[in-house]
Length: 181
Image 1 (cartoon, one colour):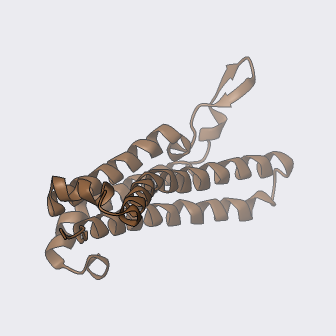
Image 2 (cartoon, one colour):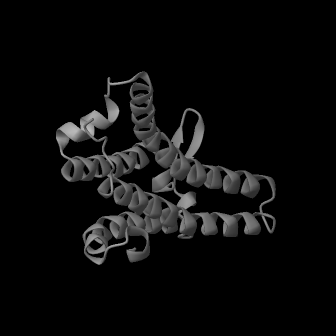
């Protein structure tokens, strides 16, 4: 963390949030691999639906975790730059180029939510669906490599989410605001 952030005191402040997000996603992903939980189903009009699924394959939870990450990033940027200079980063009417760059910065901030949440949700959900399809088509030995691939994804994705959160917060704390001309 110190290597990414560049400052030991800043790393100590960010560590609890980043590690909590990493551990929560990691723990939720590993809960899927408890044997027998897919056997507990609920009978619906569409057929039997497993009662226990990967928690992270629910987009609502992933979206809320992403919103926490992005809101904390925005709060850090506002505290570091000040509210008026932070808003000035997005709204600068001095020249058409600066106005366009401010709009692009605003779009970039909104894109953080989409990219961070869809990356985590998509990878975990796709792994769950791929595992279920392979298990349905070839119930004995062919699903094993896909289960190991899903396990690798369950380990790598929390790391990616935590590191991206760390990088976003680090970038927000080193924000460069437009100078008054």
